[in-house]
Length: 225
Ligand SMILES: [Zn+2]
Image 1 (cartoon, rainbow, N blue to C red):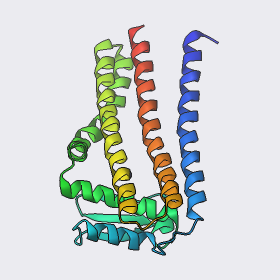
Image 2 (image 1 turned 180 degrees about the vertical axis):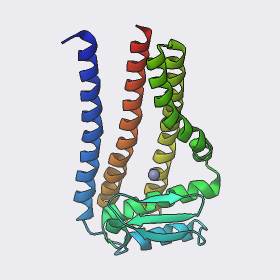
Image 3 (image 1 turned 120 degrees about the vertical axis):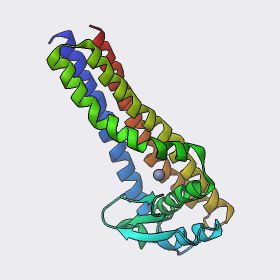
């Protein structure tokens, strides 16, 4: 096997291990804490309603959404969407995830700077995320190193977005955990479980950013040859 072939195989291996490893970890943690009942007796949707109302966000709507771990907050419509396993479930995992999504709604209402920055980057990242590959293939086809570097610069722009996402996600989890602790609606063991669920979810974002950085380093190293 040639050296370039070997480095390519290594790149794919690291990407797969990091990507699938963190996915498997969050699924495992989610399943585990989905089976542990919550002592508050609240469903995910009820816990979310409570957190939103106590933060003065009675106008934010909570809706069920199909799928597993599809939970998200949409700042444009001000809707918190909770997945099937979270909306009606009275588990530690359901409360953790529901309150995390409410954490995003609180960020939006309070003008949390990294969240605003992330929102502002979305159109540019959508463009760069699609354009970089076309520019890259164009550069390879036309044998133009300038185009290759332009493609790498576009790719690097998408990584900035992934990095800005990290403080937004950590902060939403921090708000969720502070809420369940401060309002005393979870005992310590359940707060610990909620923390495990949210930490494993955050790891998937860290792994995604790490994979992109490794790919960037790889592309730069190849371009320089
Ligand atoms: Zn989030």
